[in-house]
Amino acid sequence: MVDCGEGVQIGLARNHIPVGKIGHILLSHLHGDHCLGLVGFIATLGLGQRTGEIVIHAHKDAERIFQPLFDFFCPNLSMKVTFQSFDTRKSEVIYEDDSLLIKTIPLSHRVPTAGFLFQEKPRDRHLLVEKCEALGIPFAYFRGIKKGMDWTNPETGEVIPCEMLTTDPTPSKSYAFCSDTMYSESIIPIIKGCDVLYHESTYSNVDTLKAHQRGHSTSVEAATIALKAEVGRLLLGHYSSQFQSYEDEKILLDEAQQIFPNSELTREQMVIDI
Amino acid sequence: MVDCGEGVQIGLARNHIPVGKIGHILLSHLHGDHCLGLVGFIATLGLGQRTGEIVIHAHKDAERIFQPLFDFFCPNLSMKVTFQSFDTRKSEVIYEDDSLLIKTIPLSHRVPTAGFLFQEKPRDRHLLVEKCEALGIPFAYFRGIKKGMDWTNPETGEVIPCEMLTTDPTPSKSYAFCSDTMYSESIIPIIKGCDVLYHESTYSNVDTLKAHQRGHSTSVEAATIALKAEVGRLLLGHYSSQFQSYEDEKILLDEAQQIFPNSELTREQMVIDI
Image (cartoon, rainbow over all chains, first blue to last red; front, side, top):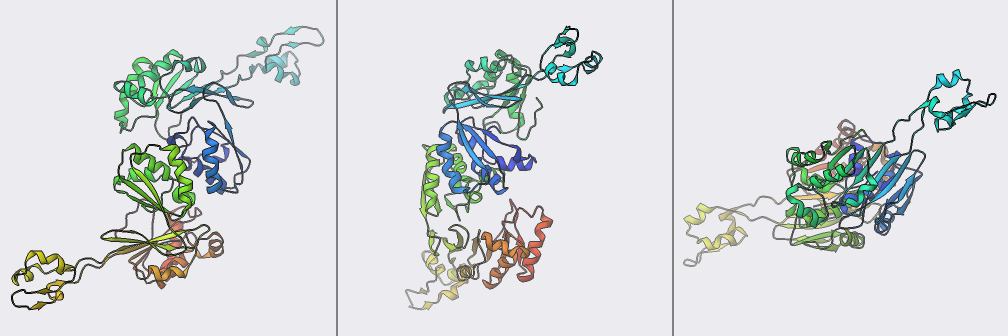
């Protein structure tokens, strides 16, 4: 789960999201609107007798701030809660499993802030099963071939290259989350070519000065990052409260689409298929 | 405002309640579901450039827990935030102005907990204006007569008693809030005869043992308190999550009404006219 603002447990329940599957919480920065739902969320998991471990990845101050609150509001938790700190000044791998890698993206905001890049690892090549069977390749070799190995016929010594036994794998997907941040071209090499970029667009272009003063971005700046990083899609969000309706927010979309046509507005409870 | 659970600022905004009028926050006890919305609420008031003072009335631990969070999440607030602690073991006046008195009600829960009794002060008597004018009583005396003073005619020395110049005042209203608590008859003298009592009813009668173990009340116990304290109306609330719908909660209402007919179920966003 990325960020944990006030009321997150209410939103998760309302959308029937099984919280038991959440094992890692990534906090981009320690402003209240990004982390004040953490204690309530952990307390509710505890009431539900959640077991195992929850890892909170965040700036090092998170443990100093939140551990006393866990101790006070939810002592004797059924699960283990640990903090893993990251350095927001450099990009580093903070999570890895068989299929996924998560890296931090150093952002520029009023406090230490990181975005997160989710990269699927390369997938297996698609095996041409009938072709393999026709060649008499034993089943035990299939896994290796899908990973890219050629096959050598033990009787004839003939080498059949992997490319003849497989087709290219489904491309791996990647998603970058960048909030909150000023316009910062230093993130471009990290997010280059990702499929989907969420980039905050707190203000419209007329408020560029205000955006810079407050460490935020305009929709034009978000779209410029998307264009320069050659991403697939841009998701806008984190709109200033001056935008009171979808009609108001459309100006952000219009501005962004003039620079990067494949831009979209996000809204609460939206589900995005990457 | 009584208690400040997670998401309270969202609920206040959704219901268009002018938060600028809230000057005092009363926390019954320091369990998360009663106070974890406090930091977000204070931070949002600060963003709105609220001025003046907010007084948080709570157990003494509140300052130790929340002040570091205010310092971290909302430094340089536009308004002053102060803590006033109360002793949950005795009933004491924690607020008073020209028309209102607020007293604590010692409750029995797993941590130090207090309810709150809101008492309107006696109102002015209703002046019989035409009668006063017919008697030639100068306007300057009206305020005193409404407060209960007799009038003496300075020329004749005749004393006209207040009762002849006024009718009885509108009765003062009182409201008692009691959550969270076990069944406790010691609160009866404090809430005796109040117009409206909110008393938690977490469980139904079949879960009386569970209620006692967890420091909560059943609907039967809430109704028994209402009956013995001779209150006007009983509002039930704080239902266990095992009650998933209004139909489920109706059992609590049925049980309570068998003992105290003037019982009602509360629900989120309900407005009660006292």
